[in-house]
Structures are given as structure tokens and as C-alpha cells.
Length: 236
Ligand code: M1P
Image: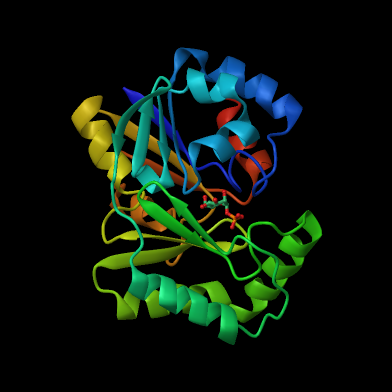
């Protein structure tokens, strides 16, 4: 059986924005006779805000916090109890002091279930501030450097770049690759996974899942939801 697994931000929607209304209409119809799973660094509320409760509930499973908080047909089935410790918080606060990007808003450290999300500009930034930081980070690779520092200093943790402005941090191995294990154990060993993500390169939060999906599974790296649409529109 084919299982269609999608990242959300950058793959189904622009980062932290709502799904395009026409794509939403298409997707709701397309997913009806398929097993669709979302695997995102984001939490339940933000994902529902972006894709809508209709798509979220229609999905076979929604793996929030990179698979650390799992829902099946809307019902919670598992949660990772991990919480960020004092040492990690101290390092993140230090990043806020030393970052060369000077603009700050608020909500820099967001505690999610089984995952901590960190952002220098802050999650309360405007769309404009988000885009400005993303452009600067593309050139300066600050998030990649910060994720590497976290990975060097905390051997029990793992940090990766997700979305436009933030870093996802969780226990080592508790990354999106959990989706493969979960699918094979809960849906069937013979499942064929098709995974669509925009951050499948090393350092990105789709990489760990992409890396463990060898043939007959398939990985599609996309640059935005339009590419996702073009890939799936004839896949019936
Ligand atoms: O899926 C990864 C991340 O995508 C978005 O990131 P950002 O806000 O950096 O663009 C958010 O949904 C974030 O919560 C999530 O971890």
C-alpha cells in the first residue's frame, strides 16, 4: 500500500501561512481514497490553522513535533515527554545575545511536546520581519551554524533547520525518521512511502526521514507547494 507523507511548511503551505484555497480544494478531494500522513516540526494548533481542520482530520495520521506527538484520525496516540533542560535554554539565550542579526521580537524559545523550537528573530515577528530574517539567514547560514553548535555540545540532542526562521531541537533520533518506523509497525511492513519535503538536504528537518527512505520508497524534494501540486496532480 502506498502511504503519502507530507511535510507542511514549505511543502503544502508557505512557511507559517495558510494553504492556498484552490490547492486546499484539490487536496481534500485527492486525499479521499489515499492514506495521507503529515510529518511536521510544528504543533497541532499551528498545523490546523494552516491546513484547516478538515484536511487535518481527514489525514490518516498527523505527526506533530517531528513525530514526537502523534494523532491518528484526530485522536492522540503518543507523546514524547522530553522537555528542554536548563543547559540547552542557557545556550539558546546566549545565541540571542551573540547573534549578528540584531532585530528581536518575542517568543524565541517555544516549548512543544517532545520538541523545542528556537528563533533569533522570534516567533512573534511580522511576515516582513520573517522574510527579512530568512533572506539574511540564507546568506549567513546562522541557523545551520547554531544547529551544529547544539549538536556538538549536547550529544543526547539533535537540532535541525525547519521552516524560515527557526531551529527544531529534540532528543537524538527523535526526528522525522520516526515516521518510517511508525508506518511500517502500524500500517504494514509492505507499505511503500512517498515522502514530499522542502528541507530534505543535510541540516534540514526533512533530511533524517529522507535519508532512511531507500527504494522502493521515494523522496521528492520540492521548493514550494506548487511543485508538490505538480507532482501529485496525476497520481491517482
Ligand atoms: O516544520 C518546521 C517548522 O516550520 C515552521 O518554521 P518557521 O516558523 O521557522 O518558518 C514552523 O511551523 C515551525 O513551527 C516548524 O517547526
